[in-house]
Length: 349
Ligand code: NAD
Ligand code: DAU
Image (cartoon, rainbow, N blue to C red):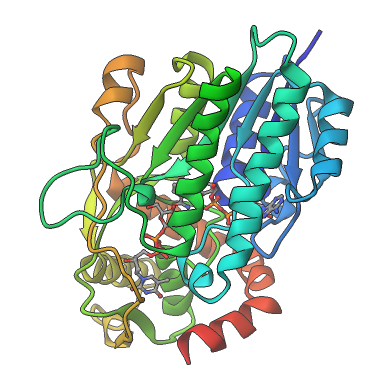
């Protein structure tokens, strides 16, 4: 009999890489991709695996407890990897309630469905909640987030993710649900929606549009190639200790302004444009309210206990990412038509 794993948010950026990894690495699993296909969900991300015999897509909104229960009852999963979320900080500032519905209530709905289905026997079951380093708040110029760092979220997005993490631990403590949690730093790579820094800058460089850097551009993020995040999820899902959390990060800190300049240089080189062409597009714009100064992950626990470390250097990862966007103009055109234009006008003009 096949083991069934439900992956939520599998049509999104990170979720699609996790789905691909599981469908191709575990032919003996049945992988069910549960996704509502919001503006961020895109089945084009999974064209190469959609015909696989061990892959199933189900369009379900996790805010709908009845629909979630029906899906659990239909597929009887042994495992859940939960990535579905509203994920963009700027959108959470304008529409916080959407983040409460999906990230908090949606997570509790999934926990309820898993608890109900597994209540007679937790043996061999696992609920993996995919979370973020933003739950820890902001660092100053030094230090790292460890698994012991206290939660201190600042944006409605990070507050909703922190809340969902607390519910996951509460279900472990109260009902004994076998959970694992990963808190990861900023991802980048193919299929990244161009509302986030790296793909937005690549898209604008390609189209000779202004490159909007918030505030003074000195904010710092720790970047990880998305496939390395998917590998970490695979390891923790299979080998992590129940009830434990694992930080995942790239050991790779960049100030936004330096990263944007690097992107300008690399894209110009690949397009054969004269050096310095795209840097002229950099425009400092109004800062993000409540902007966290710096994130940096101490990923030594997952490294020591499970042997995980990034497999791709930033230089390789960024080059592969830019090449992907250059080779996938159609994808970029599709996701930047319609709703994206309205969002962009509202956010940047
Ligand atoms: P994304 O926005 O690209 O994708 C989210 C997916 O969830 C989409 O496919 C969307 O359709 C789906 N979704 C949204 N609301 C839903 C709902 N109510 N019901 C069902 N499906 C719904 O997000 P991402 O960047 O791939 O992030 C995935 C997860 O990883 C999130 O939980 C996020 O908090 C976490 N995370 C992201 C990063 C990052 O850098 N992107 C870093 C650490 C953790
Ligand atoms: O740390 C993990 C988190 O990383 C994830 O949990 C989130 O889902 C993901 O969106 C990301 O959050 P950030 O807010 O760090 O990512 P974003 O790409 O939106 O912004 C990165 C930095 O770049 C941040 O300091 C804000 C800045 N920025 C962003 C945009 C979109 C700009 O200067 N200009 C921009 O136009």
